[in-house]
Amino acid sequence: MTAQRKTDSGVILINVLVTLALCAAVVLAMLQLSDAAITRSQRFSAAGQAHLLLDGAELSAISALQRDLQAGVSADHLAEDWARIGQDEIAIDGGRFSLLIEDAQAKFNLNNLVGQGPDNALMLQRILTALDLPEITGRRILARLVAGPALQSLSDLESAGLGPDELRVLEALVTVLPGPTTININTMPAPMFAIVAGNPVQGRLLQGIRQRNGQLTTDDLLRAGLVLTGQTGLTSRYFSVTTRVTVGDVTLARASLISRLAGHGSAPVRVIARRSLQ
Image (cartoon, rainbow, N blue to C red; front, side, top):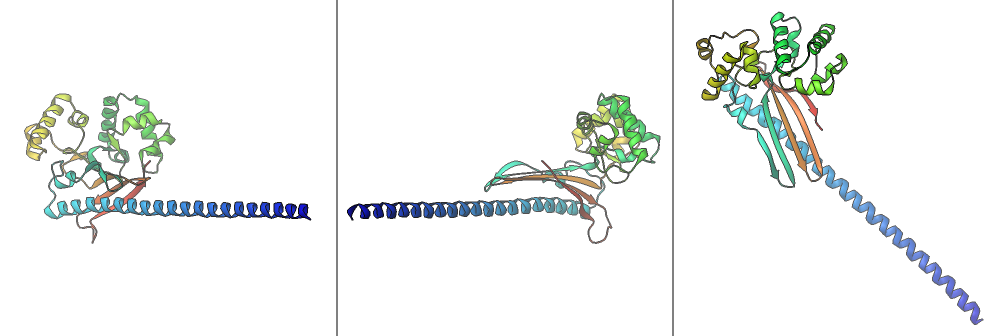
């Protein structure tokens, strides 16, 4: 009888231990699920905040360009308020934030090569020479544009046989914008001066004037003996905004293309394209 009680007690103890182990496993699983739910909730919240910051950056750029439009656009240059709203990366509550606004017409628009005359082909040739790219690159670009459709981004040239390295080099002086556009000589990068002017000496002269005065005017060009052609101008319609945001462990980046056109209904300044960045 005593032996039987001991056996029963042993079985009961094992059952109790098994039950406790099962309860512990259930509690652990519940805690893990709770932690996962909290983590997901925190990520959703961080992602929501990051998206709001991206939208806010866009709105800041639109507002600045709208004010510039209302003030009257005779020239767009880098000393204007719209060009000063950019923000180098800074710490924000729980993360990081940066904003870059650029004149998208500071570079040569490859879509100008479609039906816009031989001067644009010459411009491309000068750019390729300045970038030390071979003539075959130009022929491939022209063939792709003739075949159509219009380029949507530089990456479209991969189908024409251009590799990633060539595209990175090209990106310094060329861009892709909807329809034909002019190059804004008040915002173009330094290497473009010699290309636009047609010779390095006159290019350095124009670059020096812009550095001293913050911009170039029609009178400056006349005194330098340079007449604006259909390829160049003093104002711009397209602007690019690049925003990077980190909130918690969520990082988002967005490139936005903004169009500004006076008299364009109730929204003369608006975002016409967006894409996520790595």
